[in-house]
Length: 218
Image (tube, rainbow, N blue to C red; front, side):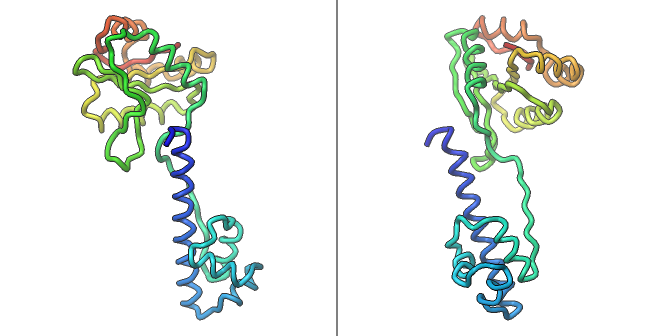
């Protein structure tokens, strides 16, 4: 399965699970109040057969609006939130940024991409991990970050949970937006990623891991 297709497939499967769970809750609530499928369907402005399909988990394309109406009719309230999980898809600009950095790394280094962090079901991954002999350096690439504090926190947690990595390199596209972010959050970034771009690039060009993490803008 390709990197691009995998998030879509995971999202589809999770949505199906949610619809099935809601269908079971709908059925239990309906039976608990002694309501018929026909009565619930009439008040929710749908058909009895559709209520049956939803309760059996056989209506994967049911809309959120219809679920909301049905659950309300049986005394339940639909609630939904989105949580961070797994990797987002990456665009061409992200891939080009990684290629610009790769061109500056010594050929002796070994590359691995989309390297998982933590347990198999964790969903987190490094964009890449560079191996210099037995030393691993994590690489994260961002073309246009907006929440620097959340980004630094995410990197810190990954580094904490990956005992194989000795340093983290944060790649940023060389844009006016990103230069402004670096100026605005200079102290916070230096506290977590103190190495300069020149220091990082010199180390990887010479085929050795940087002694500490840092930001590289390309």
